[in-house]
Picture 1 (cartoon, rainbow, N blue to C red):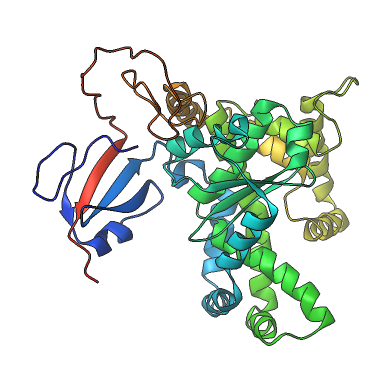
Picture 2 (cartoon, rainbow, N blue to C red; picture 1 turned 45 degrees about the vertical axis):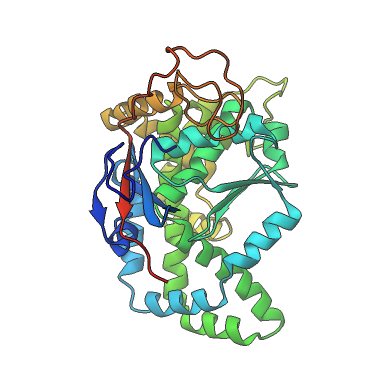
Length: 377
């Protein structure tokens, strides 16, 4: 949403500053997102200031594992080899041809959950797709990011649980997990394909991706889920919805007629951790973790519940509530102003304005406009 621009003649109708285009693109970080657009020959960058930062939600296990991963000498060569065979364009073609892209005209009841999360996290809005499948979702694409949710989520989860899943996936974007996650998934697939038939590009990647690098990548990938769980819980205002999502993976559906307890399930994590006093049990638990792409469900529930009791969580939950309670279009979920007759994103009629006709909407403090010098060529 653009509330004002600094035009080519310097007429000031919003907060703006002159900077080279390269600086515009380089200043993206964990707490701001920059979307550049060409307006009358000038490069305009809409900067949405995030209310969340990655450092506020990152789990210590995630941070430690990522630091260890990035200290490994073979990682850079592995990333370079991966980028040679990794194709976001192929994934985009697949999503367009085989999945349903959600928007104001396509399952708006689900799509409108996305914009408030992106506003709170300060991230550019990813494409959101629906595919046939079990209760799962994934995020893909380092430069062109997409979230894919599967039909099982819509069939077996409550509306707030679906929202928590989307917030979890957006948490991966906020925390800049997507590239390494894509690598981890690609290496797993490459190992399976390589075992059947040698393919030059994949063989080179597997050769460069040493066992220690692959092991460190897998370990980090597991622990990164704990950070995304935190992001989802903070946005939702409590750990309740995201913990119920974990519970669904055990087989208890939202409409189950049986008596069940999420807390009793969380308590199983205490018993599981107590087993680690035995060296053999630690070996068994390590072997189990190697067979899964995510941490143990009971452990995830306990970890996010413990974090939800901290002052840091309470502050983030209060900030997220402002984004959730902002005036929004009932169709697409984007922010609207009280004086608008139509949503500027999807065109939905909003009824009579709450302010007098002709009154200029006040620019919101979480957005600013930066104009760039003309781009040559």
